[in-house]
Image 1 (cartoon, one colour):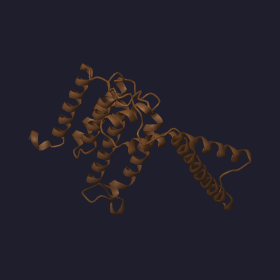
Image 2 (image 1 turned 120 degrees about the vertical axis):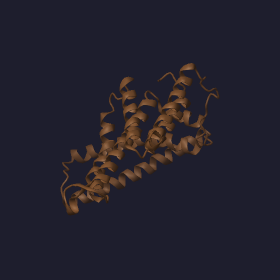
Image 3 (image 1 turned 180 degrees about the vertical axis):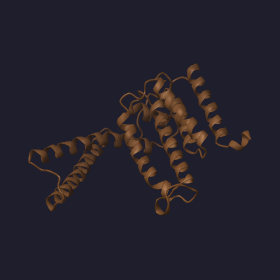
Image 4 (image 1 turned 45 degrees about the vertical axis):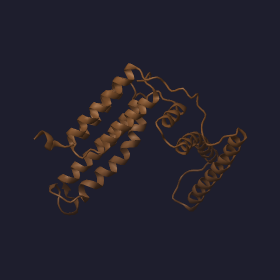
Length: 241
């Protein structure tokens, strides 16, 4: 997978993700999630991704807690306000499969891809330069933002600060957020001046030579298109009836 041209990987990612997340039938969503998971496991792209996967599914947990009880339909368990409907459970399962399919497709096709290569690939497939610049600068500043937050947290601990439900904690949390915003503003001004000193015009320079399309790249593209067509067919079960 890592030997494929970046633009091919990103196009396959966009195609498969778009087809998977727009599925409205369980067979199509399940097939997309299963294929993405199988591919990610096969190439070993899930190593070190457990925390990210758990973060993605935290949101899905709230869907399972609310959707089955708030979606009108046939009750299969409970009664009154706590009735779980068949339609709600189906919708929750569908959302779970689609969300995980998108995550596993992303992990599969971006395995080993650096941020600069990712941005270059976006430029090659026609993404606006302003969007590419925003992605690059945001990713760069997130690390700086994280370091600043960690330092502030360590400074608070050294001063014996402990989180409590009192006025001092609220004031400290507000000060913490205010300092982070100010530091982020200062860092953004420094970065802007650095880019201007380097005559940055809004377009990231590139070598101008795109990676050649190999036989493996063509095979991967054809496979992605064929599997996307299969998912589309599964999305309309009446075709097989």
